[in-house]
Image 1 (cartoon, rainbow, N blue to C red):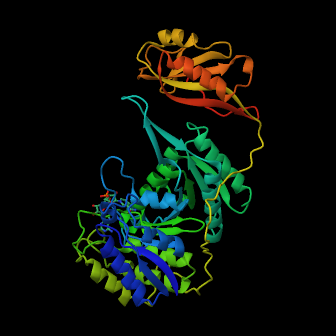
Image 2 (image 1 turned 90 degrees about the vertical axis):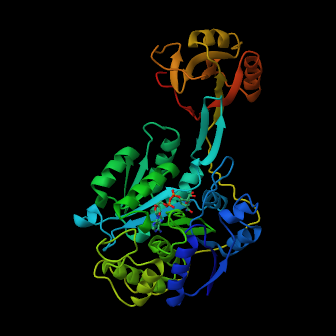
Image 3 (image 1 turned 45 degrees about the vertical axis):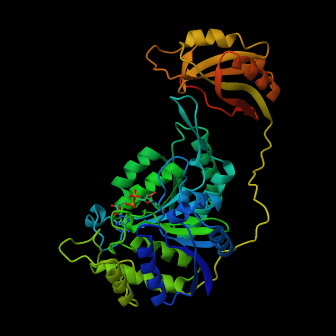
Length: 484
Ligand code: NAI
């Protein structure tokens, strides 16, 4: 028997979790559940991360959390319990599988176009870092961190998963044409990792084009790997292709701890009515059984689910509106009654259990995920973000007074567009400018030089933010302004 932590969640969470556990119990799945306290109600009791310390201890001990959806309390300063859980335990890969389900009508199923797309979304970084500041009352800044080791973790997982699943193609979705450093780094790591998997066709598609291609020819895609926010959006798009959120399972995979949940939320509009569709959570549970090596139960339950859907049983949110919708309990019982039956379309082979690859280590310290970087590093300048509502020429005159003997003022930009020394009168301005200073004659600078400039500039301006400009091994480690 394998012990796992289970959190039923909020809203429809307890209803669909009970449904799935009833199916697991009827199938004699060799799991033991420890129910842990997590969710909005725990948050309301004063636990700011939405879980009790006992819940955290249990999850870290067993390494597996099977969870229902949880409500994020609305209001300032409250972070999502779901995102906190994924980030705290470094579940860096969010795997979401979208497959044609016979009995769930979509435009593609009606056109006979099969879909089998797995989206792997980076799960920790990007704008989900939630590192945000107001630079002025008018200007909000989000720091979007994409890191080399973070990208390596998720991309290596995606390639390994694609290989094991027998995929032919793996595609990186990105916006590296615009975000050259952040998405550029993710794309660079993708092709570095691809070298170790010559059997897979690795390619990349710009994310807007990817969305268009996914809705016109979803059958051309196999595994798609993306950064966090883009992956979030693309995976909901893919959920729509196969029938909606009621059919979208999700696995948050980490090296030590993994979380299995449905993509959908707490469905407050139908909570407590006993009519929720448990399919997405059941598919997530099936994914969890496979992750744990419990292949025998996973294939039996999946076949019963596919058979049930194929034969037209449905809850109120999908299926043939001319036939009576089942409530959650009836739908669950129908799946249990169908144990041992195989669907006509895509039946799963009866598999034997395999030893689980999951290991839970007792970690004594946090892992530092550093990659070796032998490039020579030097500071060549600084970006000073300053609050001002004067015109660019007047601002430049003031900034030039502070350049001193070490710095020259290179340009001034506003929202990333150069407005001095050249620019256009048609560029609208907001009250935060970036004054870019570089060292005279490319001489390396040090942090004290930057502090000196900061002190001098602060006599004239409110400085909102400062970024040093680095060169690594002769390459600029910063972006140029539009028009620079
Ligand atoms: P939602 O996914 O809860 O609901 C959207 C629509 O889909 C609703 O009409 C709902 O009735 C329907 N729906 C969702 N799941 C269903 C199911 N299993 N069966 C039948 N119908 C279903 O999204 P919404 O309303 O934006 O979010 C509600 C709450 O859920 C929020 O507090 C949000 O933060 C939270 N949430 C939690 C997630 C998680 O725990 N991983 C993910 C997404 C949202």
